[in-house]
Length: 305
Image (cartoon, rainbow, N blue to C red):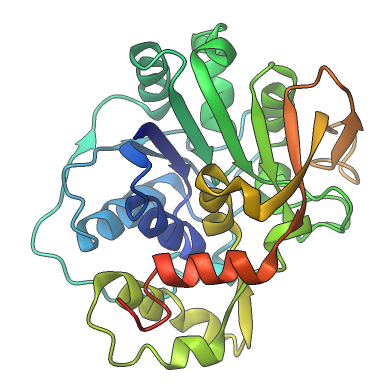
């Protein structure tokens, strides 16, 4: 089992990603760190703790991280995730697990040192915490086994501006630092995440669910399907977790990634450069049917467990 930390800004798809990570026998979730993104960092921390408690993972600690980007003001995505960030989910829990006094960047650094060469960091949010951790420990790229980033739009348009995807756009300076630092990275961007979706028809069949995972999916889907009237939404963050354990379901290209920051028009634009010596791999194509079947089975959306 590989030790793993999820860095999240817990909204709807982060919640499903947490459930997915907990269901993977090859991953040992040792901590979850939070950052401002979809919602403010306080709300993200509360949401994360609630989801973990609902899923029976009270022993997994949560560490609160950066309250905003390195250089910019925080801009949230509550319009997409609902006022509470969790789509109005009702998840009654009896007691809560721990929220650490240690900051998220410090938790990342300490875990990287403890599990030198073994830790997998899955970043499902703006990369502010990792950029700060890098300043605390410049050798971090050589201590962490790999970093999986849900972020970027390489051969497709962004979802916030024509150039940029939300996580990278939210803190492009942090993303640029991470991209240039020398981590062994896997970038899972909109090129593939927009293609694997949670359909309304599947959601409607969860009305009598009894397992915590499909109940979670039913509850966090309310804002999208009842309030926004969507027919589906992309499983961005779960797909990034999937990439950490089933990378054969994605076709990758190797090289390096550059994040542009110079003007507002291009801020957060991700550029892939072919480079035989590059340590980045970029998701180029997803095996859609296989990925969807894997996610539905692991999240209990297929009605079989």
